[in-house]
Length: 187
Image 1: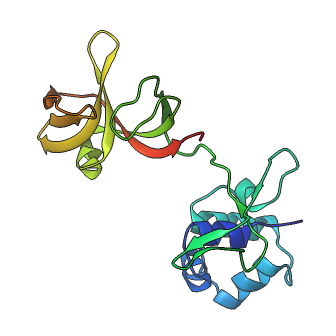
Image 2: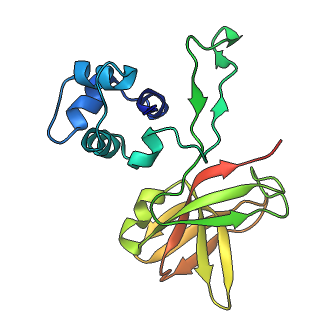
């Protein structure tokens, strides 16, 4: 079985030691390294442990025949673009958690026409965690407000719309908000 443990770990910006410590029960960085390189056989149990430590599904740690991977041609660093040190691939985005989508038809603020925005649904108790992030808020009559969350006062949300010069919107008692988590843009 070909695994992508190293690719996922690097994409999550975690060290071998951090992944080993996050496993339940904890293991050693050397063991994670051996599982990454294939010098130790990866069982389903190990895949599940490592996936939980990385916060992904076990399926994301293996190469699947129906999933297209995108090979990394170059890495853009402080000295410009250079070839990667070893063969690697970009991880395709997989839905996780309570996600919903937003399609941009007309450019607004940082968003261009054709963008697909992935939003994570949050309940009222977690609204404050979205401060200074772009959010989508449901309104009456199947309408929504979209903009930057500028303030949370109890159950009142203060939103700055994405359009320049637009006035702040105040929404009370929103049942949920969608926080922007990913932007998919074709160039």
